[in-house]
Length: 239
Ligand code: NI
Image (cartoon, rainbow, N blue to C red; front, side):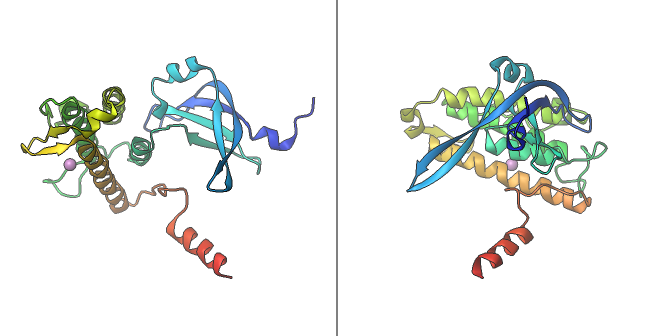
């Protein structure tokens, strides 16, 4: 049977990227379906991935799972399949850290790449997630022995994020409206404290971008387009 060209872009091979420069490990297949949905009078199309549940479980975490997609141009593209936008963006930029630079910083007194990643991971799990259970912070710091090597800090981050996610998903709407207590002893409504967690991650992710910029390493644009491309398309709109 001849497969129509446009359908080739629906089929994908699923793979896992263990981190670093080890490339992708292929092991499963899936396909995309496009579902139209009405929103504010416009038809939006959402793309969903269809695959067996055990493929996702075998990957260990959604953050590690990637799809190898055949594009209409005929080449292939690897796309992360994480539905947790926040950490996925941090892991994507962390994947750009050169293999010999995890313990690098621009100044001896400042966080290294590894420190930044361990700090984010441990704060999420042991401060924010503990506070979300209305318990005091157990933040252990960001010392190198917590997660060493090149892959260690990123694996630690993915694991801490999974544990934290389980705690956050167990919260009810009422819990989010209750007061928790920060390590500074200040009572704060839980949802506001969790909003601060997102801001905290964005703050340190920005530092990772700057560190990579100092080293001359190319980084992925946040939303798929660079600011130059956005400018170009904005000009086209004016015509
Ligand atoms: Ni911090």
